Amino acid sequence: MKITLAVAMVFAMTLFSFSTLSMAKSSRISDEQIKEKIIQASIAAYSGNCPCPYNSTRNGSQCGKRSAWSRAGGYSPICYKGDVSRKMIDDWRMKNGNK
Figure 1 (cartoon, one colour):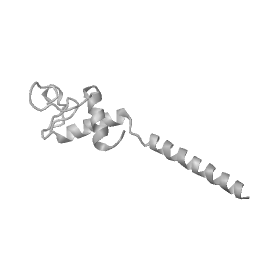
Figure 2 (cartoon, one colour):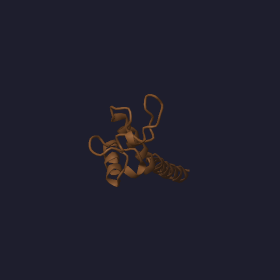
Figure 3 (spheres, helix red, strand yellow):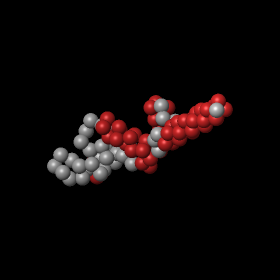
Figure 4 (cartoon, helix red, strand yellow):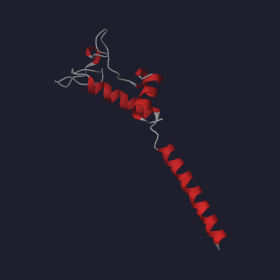
């Protein structure tokens, strides 16, 4: 009887360990999700009206070439997933504790 209880306890602890590991892996944010977060933060940090070409001006027209992203020099917001480097993703993970 004591052996059966001990085996059951070991089995339960093993299951708990695996479920905890699997939950930790599933809670990891994907690179694509991090790219979206970086883009959103960059756009939110821009104080003007046209950070990216796909944004709209106050009158509702698209920013296009008038956007900060399209202009040389000055503030350059991150507007597209292709603008996000591997280093930016790694830095985001380090800063936000999501490895």
